Every structure is written in structure tokens, then in C-alpha cells.
Image (cartoon, rainbow, N blue to C red; front, side, top):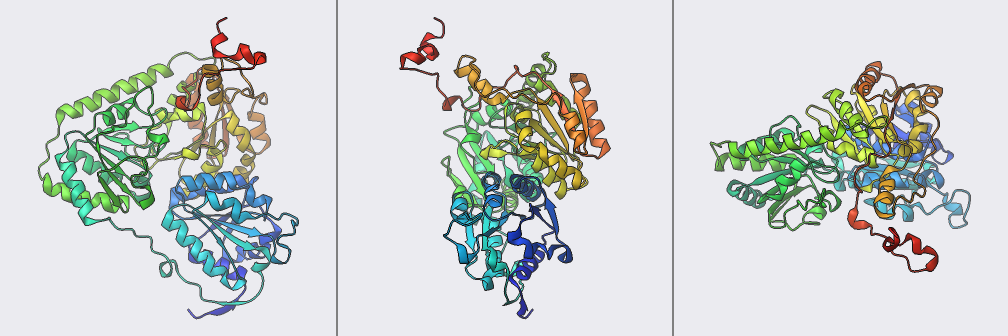
Amino acid sequence: MKKVKMTPSEAIVETLLAEGVEHVTGIVGSAFMDMLDLFPTAGIDFLAVRHEQSAAHMEDAYTRVTGKCGICVGQNGPGITNMVTSVAAANMAHTPMVVISPSAGTPTIGWDGFQECDQVSVFKAITKATVRVPHPKRAADCLRTAFRIAYAERGAVLYDIPRDYFYGDLEERILQPHQYRVDARGCGSLESLDRAAEILAAAKRPVIVAGRGVVDSGSKDIVAKIADRLTAPVAVTYLHNDAFYADHPLWVGPIGYMGSKAAMYSLQEADVILAIGTRLSVFGTLPQYDINYFPENAKIIQIDINPKHIARTHPIEVGIIGDAKEASSEILKRLEVKIPNPMVDQERLSKIAARQKEWDDEIVNTAMVDGNPINPRRALLEISKVLPKNAIVSTDIGNVSSTANSYLRFSGEGMHIAALTFGNTGFAYPAALGAQLGKPEAPVVAIIGDGAWGMSLHEVSTAVEHNLPVVACVFRNGAWCAEKKNQVDFYNNRFVGADIPNPESFVPVAKAMGAEGIRVDNPAQVGEALEHALQSRKPTVLELVVDGTQLAPPFRKDALALPTRHLPKYAALDVRNWNK
């Protein structure tokens, strides 16, 4: 294709089309209206949200479900800064994303004009890169750079363009993605793969840890074949419960906060760990349930697509920089040569099954303890029983949402879309909407506490407008319960800012916004209500009234300390005086 005359707006839109972009999410603004005017003719949908933070959460989940880089946009200044939290979350989640960031016009930069903000500086620390368009003629070139970095480094990129740079004339040749970026990473060093297979073949107690890279690369089947050949239990990383088949006999569940004791005890005794598609984050490998489970002396083989993550948190024996599927396939080939006739280790298999049963019994028994009116664990258990195999479940952050880590299992094409280690509330519902966009045919459920719901319930209008039949399971316990648990354990039940005076019910609120609403205060009705909501294929708010006193342990026992007070006026608050 020869260079042809076009405007910067046309060059941007044509580049989006070349990348296969079908929609852009955000809130209308004058700063990018010249570009926006082209969308209907180009065939790009503009999905309007009610708050820009939701836009990036939606695109984060859309990308996780489809593999396509998400695109969001907002008005210069406050529209873009409203996305700070959600862009930071997507970036920490390793989700490719391009934020189209119109900025103040060049004639007025530096005058503190209306809606002026140095957006590049704001986003520099929370993105993989900030790409600023230096001249209108570079509009398409810089957008290609943004896509290249987003895919290559697996994260968010800010594409900052002064609002007057959408206008003018330029000569441009629209390139196809293969002409300016390469997605294939390959299998990594052959020498490292040989060494990895050698260590695994000699291992006595190997354990596999599967992370998001397994999900993104579609390599669960290969992981299963490696596990079968080694009789190796497979744990999944924190909040990636979909990284292995929960109905496989070698599944032991998730590690990390509210994870599986079966997984933790398996890791504790490992002599070799094969970590596939994971950075082995600090928070995701901290001791839990007073179990210091991540072994210090095990040989770690780590596969990650990003060299920055290799051995970042744990010393390794072998590091493999490559695609999780490609590297795993090569390791499997080598193991098939080294162990041509594998013998199933029946003793180990029985031990894995016994541990898994013990853990299952523990979480079911804990869930069956009566609550007033519903034990939140019982609600999670009932939800897990009726979820279809292809269900996509988004989870927020908080006491109840995080407890879902113990109960969520995925054995089919279902996916777990979680807030991950940025840990912001208000993630799950807009993420569920984005996941529904990515897979319109899939049943999509969001698990949310009522605190996080207060940050995102306005997007029910978005679900209704775009006919996204997401079911929001809102756990109503009247408090910020993760923080309330900290005040129980560390501050002698002194509650400050923890209680939430909610509306009498969220059901009429949902109905007023055009959605369905169901309220449940009987544990025996939770599963039936969710099944009904899923079958209706309508945006639905399922309000679950749960006991606010049945709380999970604190997220970080190591990050808090019992209070000491030195000033006389605060003496009664000192831990040494609690029983006086």
C-alpha cells in the first residue's frame, strides 16, 4: 500500500482497524471527538461507561478473555486521570492495553488551562511505557509503537496525543501488525530446556505451579501431560484458579491467600518446582494458615515470557524465557525421551487424593456452619455447585471475594478474572462486563462485596444499555469486612470507618436501572436463584444477605502490629491495657 493523504484521526482509526479493534471503551469528550466521529463509518463501536475507571477494568477483562489488546479513551485531564487505578491494575496484571490519552492542546500547554494535566508524568510509573505523539504526522507511527510495547511487555501503554494533533493532513501508509510487531516468543534456550528436563526426570517429589501464562497460551493440556508423566501435583497461582483442570486427579488447587492447604502441603515437600507462566509473586507465595509452604531448598525451573520476572522473587535453578505453551511442549518432548514408559506413582497419587479430600471436607464443613442469615462461605459453596463449566467468574477484593479462592473450580472452558495483586475494590463488575463482551455466549458471574458494589453499581446502566447479561452476586454484609477483621484482631473490636449504611435493598435499585433484581436470605435458595438468573440472560443483581461476623483471616498478618500508645490520652488503646 502506498502512502495516501489522510488526517491524523483517520490514520489512528485505520491503525485500530488494522489491529482488529472492534470497540473502544470510555466516555465521550471533545478532545477526541474528531476521531470518535469516524467510528460508526469505520465499524468500531464506542462503548460508553458511567465512570472512566470502569473502562479500563472492562478492557482488562476483555483482553484476558480474547487475547486482543484492549483500548480505552477519555477526555483530557479528569477523564484520563479517572483511569489511573484501573490502568495500574491492568498493568500489574500483565494485560496488554492501549490508553488513547488526548492531552491539552499545544498552544496552551503550561498555562494551567481548562482540564490540563501532565498525563505522561501521571501514568509513567503505572504503565510499561508512555508514548507521546511529537507531531501530527507521527500519529499512526506512535500508535503502532504503543501496540508493539503493549503486546511485547504484556501491560498497559499510554498513547498521549495533544488534542490539536487529531487535525491536519499527512501522508501515511497503514501497516498490518505483522509488519511492525512480532508476537511469537518461541520456546526459550534449548540448553535450558535440556537442563530442565534432566532435573525433572531425576526429581523425587516434583510439583508444577501453573500461572496466567498457562491460561493465555492455552497450554493446560500440555501441563496435564507433563504432570501425568511425572505424577506431579499441579497447584495454580494466586487468583488463577483456571490455570489447570480442577477435575484432574493431580489438581491440588490454588496457593496464596485463602488458597488450598492441599496445594501448600504439596509444595512444602517438593524437591523440584516447575513454575510455568508465572512470576511467583511475593504476595502470592507468602505463608498462609501459618503454613510456610514455599520451599527454600527446592530446585525451581521458571518459565516466563518476560525476562524481568525470572528469579525476581525466588532463586532459580533454570530460567526459561519463552512462551508457556512452546516451552512446556519442548520439555514434554524431552521427558517422553527420558521417561519413555512412565509408571504412575500410586502411593503419591493416593497421598494427593487424600490431601485434596481433607481440604474439600474442611471448606465444606466450614461453609455448613449456620450464619445469620447466610454464612458467606455457604453462599460461595452453593454458587460453585451450580456454575456451568464454561462460566467466567470475576472476583473483587475483600473478605468474601477473596474467600472465593477456596471454592472456585474450573474444569472446562471457564475462566477466573480476578483483581490480582493491585487489589483494588470495584474491579469485579466492570471486569465481568468486559468478559461478557469478549465471550457473548458465556455465562458470566461477578462476586462482589457490598463495599466494592458501591463503587461499581452505576455500571448496571452500562450492562442494560449494551445488553450484557452479567449476574452480579452482591454479598451484603454491611461492612468493609477485610478491614473490619483487622480491627477485630489488632484493634480490640474498635471499628472506625468499617460499617457501610447500605440502602434497604439493592433489588429496587437494580430494577430502577432496568436490570433484574433478586434478594436471597436463605442459604438453600442461593443455587436456585443463581441458576434462574443465568438462564434469564438478563443483567441481574443477586443480593445475598450474609453474616458480617463470619470473617476470613487478615490478608497480611505480617503487615500489622498490635498497637502501642505513648501519649496519656491514648493509654486505654494500648494493647497492654486491654484487659485492665
